[in-house]
Every structure is written in C-alpha cells, then in structure tokens.
Amino acid sequence: MAAALAAATALTGHTTAPAQAAACNGYVGLTFDDGPSSNTTALLNALTRNGLRATMFNQGQYSAANPGLVRAQVNAGMWVANHSYTHPHLTQLGPSQIDSEISRTQQAIANAGGGTPVLFRPPYGETNATVKAAAAKYGLTQIIWDVDSQDWNGASTDAIVQAAARLTNGQVILMHDWSANSLAAVPRIAQGLTGRGLCAGKISPATGRAVAP
Image (cartoon, rainbow, N blue to C red; front, side, top):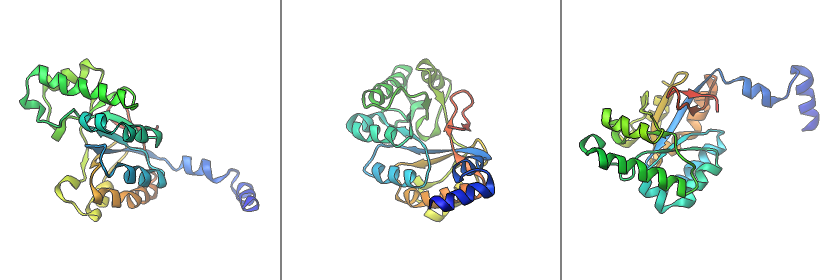
C-alpha cells in the first residue's frame, strides 16, 4: 500500500487526498428537514460513509426530545439549523407566536449541544415580511431551496437521485430526515456529485448559497 502510494505520488506529484480536494469545481447544499427522528442515526451513517456533509433543519420539539441525536449530527460534521418548534404554517400566525416558534427552537438546539443556529427554514417554505423579520431578530438567514426532491410527496429513490442531478453550483436541495427513499439515495447522490465535480458544502448565511465548508 505504501509502495503504491509512493508510486502514485511519483507519477502525479501528489497523493490522492489533494486530487480529491481539487475535484471540487463547485458546491451544493444538501438539506434534511424535520429531524431528529428515528431515521437520523442511519442517515448520519450514510452521509458520513459517503463523505457528505449536510445542513439539518431540525424542529425544536424533536431537538428537545432527542438531544443525543442533535449532538450526533454535530459530531458527524453536519450543520444544525432552525426549522421552527412545531412546524406550523407560520404565515397564519401572529408575530408573538412566530417569535416563540423561532426562539424556542434556537434554545432547544443550543441546549441539546447543536450550537446557535444561523440558518432558518420556514415550514413548507411559507414566508412573509413578518416571518423574515422574526428570523432576522435572532440573527437567522432564511433559506428556502432551489430543487425540491419531492421525498415528502412519496418520490422514489430514483426520482430523488434525478432531482439531485439537477443541482448546480451554489444551489440547495430539499430532503427530509425521516425519508427512507432519501436515505437510500445518499450513495448515488454522492456518486453523481463526484461525477460532476461537485462537493457537498455549507450554506452561507451571507448569501444563502452553498460554499466551501
């Protein structure tokens, strides 16, 4: 193995690790909503095994109930973000209720060891000026998505893989923590991104786009 590595180094001038890093011609944001759930551990294992990092838009109520899973998300190299406390239609609520949904989630995630989120995704992608203002009050950047995997709508694993194949540099895809089909799609998503010279990045709070981690 050492000899093979030395030979590869002699031929190329570097080992495989820098070559892999140089293969990132762009970054995409993989996002998983609604966790943590009973599927989280398997999802984290699949992401880690395939060299992927993702942003986990957690619900506050599940973060409070499963602090160990929030810590597991962080330990696996994922970024933990705010997806409201109970997943209501925020645009149908008053300002104080919206504030409560966001602030309680910030607290629940921080208490669970997930750090203080800097990203917020409103449930169903529904937002307005009041929701945006409430998020901004807590230093949160609102993130919707560019590509919807439709996993919430029963999309097949093949369809989810095809959705990920539409991602271009800087774009973000919506998936869900609890989706068995999205879990099954992870290895093929990783393969597809590698084939296109794209890597899984983090979402910039400044621009809302995926950038280098």
